[in-house]
Image 1 (cartoon, one colour):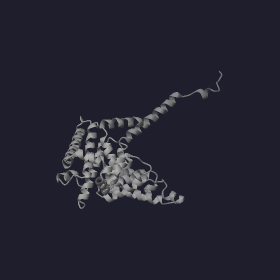
Image 2 (image 1 turned 60 degrees about the vertical axis):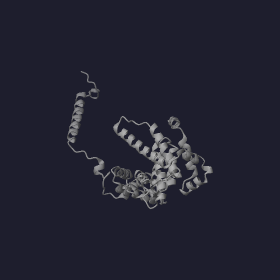
Image 3 (image 1 turned 135 degrees about the vertical axis):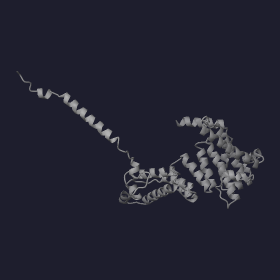
Length: 342
């Protein structure tokens, strides 16, 4: 009987291989079942993420993944309203970057800043928000000033413009506030909230100059009940802005079938109507006021008052022109702009 010399090579034992595979799969399944009884511990709990860690701040910033860990911790603290801790960490982060930006030697940079951190933008924003929440207005303005200088040439982000407008208004820099609100509206011109905030800014301006010793961040609704406002150029501008806010709010889509959205809509509408009605009572003849404002170039008294309050004439002109554009036309313009962006 002839023996095939290649028989050993061709004699595959498929049954044995299948048995080994089955045993391996069974072993893996058993391992999974055993692990199901073990408690899962997320990384952010045992590695210090979002919580206190024994690793020093400077070492974390130099370690791989450390900057991300710190940023997430700061955001976590902010959203859980732990503003003091969030502010402290964000200021340390900013200080570290500013110190590293002063380094010129490449070897020093490699040692002290291996992650090449050079932009404190996010931390400046969150620090300013924390400071505002903690009523530390000076610090909030200081942070937003740094953010403004950092972003002036590189960002047209509406969120940053609104933040600057809000903080400058709180810090008493009303002209700067209106300036950035206008820049915001030049990008998103149908946002009623910004017109509402501009109205508030003008009223804070009036209240601050009329009562310099008082807290100019007082709730406007409380101020109006005291009846201290008188008809001036500033209150007229506040009325123009709040009327514009009301018009835009009514054409804004609201899902009022949802209870909490309907509640918000009702609250916003009531608040804007109240302020608008109050300012209309202060300004006896709104149409006459508008005609005076339309002739600003010839009205030396109005121009002087604008300058005294620190506002720019072109800024006021923009508000007057924009407030006359039909809201329906504005909505169509905005839709066309969005279509082009797409």
